[in-house]
Length: 280
Image 1 (cartoon, rainbow, N blue to C red):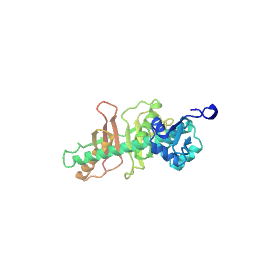
Image 2 (tube, one colour):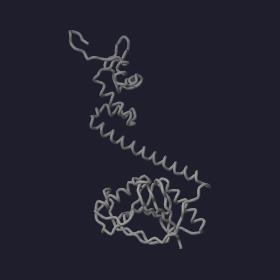
Image 3 (cartoon, rainbow, N blue to C red):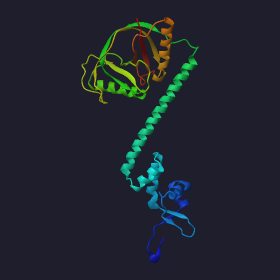
Image 4 (cartoon, helix red, strand yellow):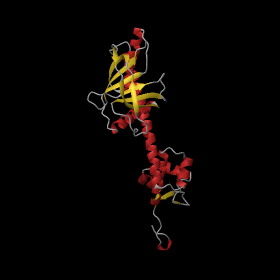
């Protein structure tokens, strides 16, 4: 449109038009305008109608990003006042994406645990338990490390140690193993040891910075069962072993050992041998 004297004046849009073109509800635009965060480009002094310009679209986009990031309105106002650039916004988005990813992973693990418990409940008093055998297991030597992680860190630690050992060019002589040293279950502090059977000498560290050392799983007489199915359902194996120890009047003589005969990416899915040493 033209201003006085033929000078060009910025084109402005009524709030409804601006809403339709930016895909932002009118109520949201008014709300931000009332807060002084999105000041209209022009307000008709007679009608009070609010008008916005195309130059304000980048600001609208930033407001919506900050809102989705979970910032309070006070924080949004402060950020807008500092005129955060695209690089800073991109960095905030990456942080938020990582946070959302962690929450999604946590909720998926929670769902897996619920489904595993439901499966146990459905089996109560129904199908016979898993077969338990007594084995004299031999000592196993290899490379690995021991660390304390939270429950969500079990998988990443296993991958970190496995990756570190493989990076050294070590040739595995058997399936990978994990030993759980916890005297009691604490999801925030799982004391676990990952071992890759190999004759190679220890050297270097894992990608996560853990020191690779020589590890030994001692020989023992153990009650053993083989579990077919995803890792969240391993509780079935442990409950079967618990029932066996109770029926036999035996005591557990050491930490639990899991031997990963096949992994989740192999045909047929995970096959895990679970061992509990038998006390004297």
